[in-house]
Image (cartoon, rainbow, N blue to C red; front, side, top):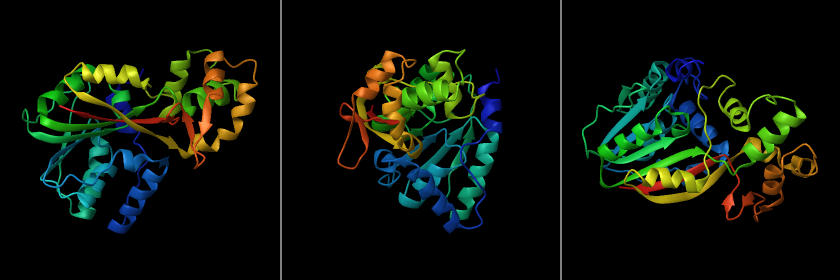
Length: 280
């Protein structure tokens, strides 16, 4: 299996070269709009005069957000991918945004940042791809100031993505990934079929892991992708499919819609992006 650094150097998340600042901002808003509720749950505004770290910054979408909508004291962008950091540098230059970009080693996860020096850590769509999650969280606790904040988006187990898209659409309708486990099928469904690591978490399990490193907090909400919403009409067919495992039919039977037509599982949006806020 390809190692994470090699994979993410060759496979960047949604990106393009932008001729102008205006085009770059349009991409920022387009990217966030692909996930209903995301920007409200993982805001880039409100970090004035703060030292901010975007961990797993990729080609710089959220760095642009912090640079445009917060007046940060210091902005770091960290990633394992050299190509992502090159794109981020190019894009930040369009906006005249100053940021320190740092490439790290996925096997070590050591951050060349002073202890208790960071006010806010933002990491979106990254920790579920990490080889050593515990090492990353240990470093977060080291560099974060007392009272500092940590915002995380990771893939949600209790989502239409897993229970409808992967379990029903991919494995039954399309006949893909039937010879591998559900979690391996999920891994192949998110960021390319060869993506080496891609986990999803139940909220209780993820909160327990993060709290074990000295943080307190919890789930702030979930965002749902346009792709998931586009598949909602398949729910009844999935529920009535004899081949679909009962864990998935039970989940889909419990889905309700809120007043805006957004699917809920219990009190949480049944979307792929679970967003957490923690403090040190």
